[in-house]
Image (cartoon, rainbow, N blue to C red; front, side):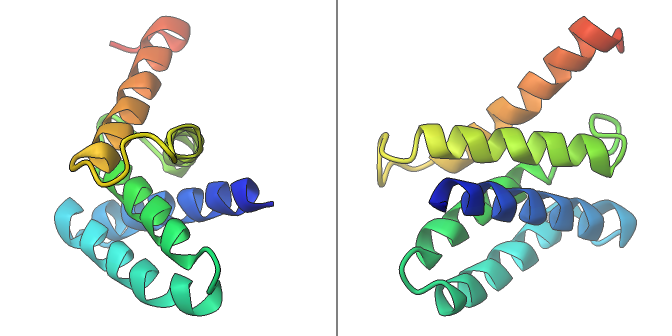
Length: 125
């Protein structure tokens, strides 16, 4: 059940960051900061036992949501990237705790994996 919740929060956070950044034209850094702040304040309140883990997953996915509009063309693509980020977060949840750059690295890996998938299977340049 915890893993499903992490995946749901990851997808919501990634899509929300994408919307604030690209649809509301607020910029990627501001969008990620807003989503991370809201997640950090609200998720521990609503989920006392695992709120900090969910907030961390939301932050990780918000970093993936900073992808450019040219690389993620729509919300469907962003939802797939966010889902991949959530899966990677679950797979590495106990790896290197406290090491800086881990969340951004997971977000970058998810974005690069999506771009590679599109290039190989869809044929985009």
